Image 1 (cartoon, rainbow, N blue to C red):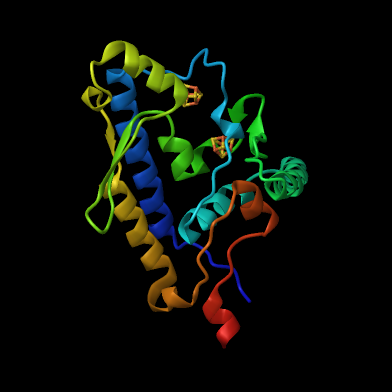
Image 2: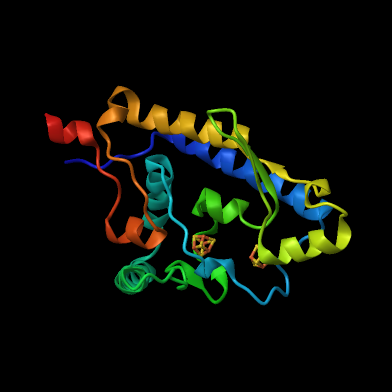
Length: 207
Ligand code: SF4
Ligand code: SF4
């Protein structure tokens, strides 16, 4: 089986979507106003799972650029994360463990961090494919600020995620092509994406 790699054009497009997300986030964060500076929490220990091969492949693009020593450290941490998260989940507890890419409170792979890492914090709006609209209140700190500064929660500005998510889904289709239906659905933590290795091209194993 060969690796599922991103063509340079696809890699450029995902970087553009990520930049657009960061820009949208900053606008809403300034309006709220919300900043992570001085926050007693660190969201990089939140238990998040990720659903796209395109982000998985892009994460690996970043991992490949790490020097050997850093990579070994990250893999060791990722293995420990996977083991401990399985143990906690088996007990019915939601894991709260440091992301294996976190170095001294900073993301060690900032340019390649995933969508949820970029969006978490400010309130957000999403229209699902079935037309249902959803509103997310943002992180605990954001919710406190919104309570103080706005009469109703819905008066606070929110980041519109729908178009950005659609663009990401489009890139997923571009990557997987007309065999998209053959790929198993994924739901992986960053640690699992590291421990499992890069995503594999399903077409190559069918030949
Ligand atoms: S997103 Fe919210 S909870 Fe997370 S570090 Fe920033 S302010 Fe704190
Ligand atoms: S990838 Fe980076 S930003 Fe995302 S959880 Fe890990 S350390 Fe935090």
